[in-house]
Image 1 (tube, rainbow, N blue to C red):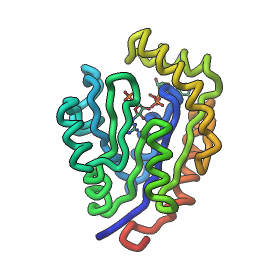
Image 2: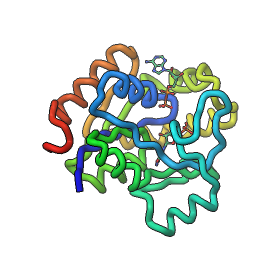
Image 3: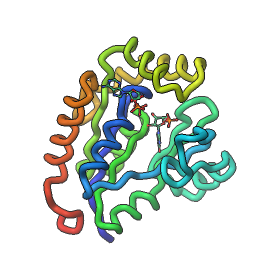
Image 4: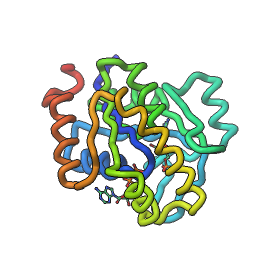
Amino acid sequence: MQQGKIIIFSAPSGAGKTTIVKHLLSINPQLNFSISACTRDKRGRTEENGKDYYFITPEEFKKKISNDEFVEWEEVYEGAFYGTLKSEIQRIWDSGKHVILDVDVKGGLSIKNFYKNQALAVFVKPPSIEELASRLTARNTDSASSISSRVFKAKFELSFEDQFDKVIVNDNLEKAFAEAEKLVNDFIGTKQPANV
Ligand code: ADP
Ligand code: 5GP
């Protein structure tokens, strides 16, 4: 069974982990994105099933939990379940690439604990809570109540920073990109997974 490495990006919602992960994927062909399963509604024009997430029903999600198909899963927001599928990690390793994923803070620590030194856990920190709230508003993808629950949760999530291997403060985006590129290159080197 071929095994590569796993790079985890976790952050409070709105801190910029998706932006950073998309950038890394666009410049590094050794990486492939692990698509999570989730039960929330698809964001109309911006998201695709099987690309951003596998959008499934709560019933299908529960079935996958009982079949032990997840590395980890969380009810990230009330009524919204998200989980990392074992089959997805293996699919990427079998294709000869390393896994990169973007999960909430608790899920990130669970994955790190599962894969230990095979995984690099990176925490993306917003410059301030005020800036986080304004980015979520400007992103224009969530309702006012969803934004306030994300900001409320962020205050708690920031207390987990010390448990991650590395922290990137995402203030200036170009600087955050450069820091992320260096962390990834130092961790995976230039070797293909088959040689890891
Ligand atoms: P997350 O995946 O952590 O929820 P996103 O990557 O979606 O966060 O970023 C939230 C919003 O903030 C997006 O609209 C994104 O374009 C914007 N953003 C990301 N990084 C920065 C930054 N350094 N400065 C200003 N806006 C940013
Ligand atoms: P969004 O609804 O904004 O796409 O994502 C909400 C949160 O769920 C984000 O913090 C995202 O990183 C997290 N998330 C996405 N996939 C997973 C997953 O598989 N497991 C966990 N624990 N969180 C996830």
